[in-house]
Amino acid sequence: MEFSSICCFSMVREYLYKLLRMDCCFAFGKNGQAIEGDDSEHRVRIFSYSELRRATHDFSGANKIGEGGFGPVFRGVLRDGTPIAVKVLSSTSRQGVREFLTELTAISDIKHENLVTLVGCCAEGSHRILVYNYLENNSLAQTLLGTRCSGIRFDWKTRVKIAVGVARGIAFLHEEIRPPIIHRDIKASNILLDKDLTPKISDFGLARLLPPNATHVSTRVAGTLGYLAPEYAIRGQVTKKSDIYSFGVLLLEIVCGRCNTNTRLPHEDQFLLERTWVHYEQERLDEIIDADLGDDLNVDEACRFLKIGLLCTQDAMARRPNMITVVRMLIGEKKLPVHKITRPAMITDFADLKVSTSGQHRGHETRSSTTRSYSTTEEEPFSSSETPTQTSL
Ligand SMILES: Nc1ncnc2c1ncn2[C@@H]1O[C@H](COP(=O)(O)OP(=O)(O)O)[C@@H](O)[C@H]1O
Ligand SMILES: [Mg+2]
Image (cartoon, rainbow, N blue to C red; front, side, top):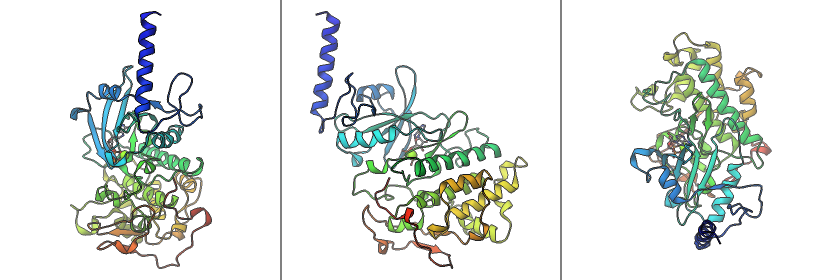
């Protein structure tokens, strides 16, 4: 036997041995690649831990680009030069290998222009790591809503492209995937931008990677709460309509160029949703559009977007449009039902909000949090397609 074949054989044997030592085994494709179950059509690219260590310079601080509810994220470069974003799941989000790969296989099959692509993962020993395409222009939170040091100019055309792109991405998750995926965490830091400022939604389908005892909000900063529909924040009730609420808040942020919550502002201006409602009632919506846009603006279109934002954040879920309708209203294909806009639902005083753990409704645990539901109209019932679920993804 030639030396190279011996080497090759022993490498394969070592790899197989490593895999067998993992807490769960999984199937192999013809060429030895790890695959989900026995379905050879669906595969997740598996990275070794050492490969990712090398790609991120040993997960160096200099390569760290952020840290969210799941753990730190690092920039890395693969041997072939491909830039990647490496999300290291914290120990609380560890699952068995098979379970982890099954969830990821489902996500890795999902391809859409407005969704971040999952490149692969690492499930070696106790490590659980996700590998994504690296997006050059960071997130909306750090650019449009951040310090604005990024140098990116968000002109009106770009903002329309971002708003419509995000809406299309969510519509795809909700309406074109079976079973549908409810994102649960639509917010500016989960909207990444590629080199052409095309928006890509990240972190979809990840809720299932969380252990069952993790709350859906506790690890997140209070800012995230500004995006949460009241029924989700308080009762843990997850439906497509909770994503639509979050999209509504994001839409206001895109048009106004500011975060939904800014406690450094005078009290009456701190909450963007509240401010938008006040201006809507006074027919002065045009005054809250981002001043940075100057004359580069279609005022009618911007005001329409703000009204769509108000419609998406209605207290009664049945009043919030579905995402396909939102896309059609954004692009002007469908008229906005202005008569449906009532005061949006807003949650204030986030400080001591305690939310339910998955599978439990514990609305009474919301201690000092207040839901200000201004809806004076009747509570509209769920439509059958909007039956609330705790687990649906
Ligand atoms: N694929 C990616 N490309 C570039 N940057 C990314 C990517 N994924 C995440 N990031 C950066 O890492 C940060 C942390 O991401 P994440 O862990 O998802 O937390 P969060 O979404 O709560 O900010 C993001 O805000 C973003 O700036
Ligand atoms: Mg994220």
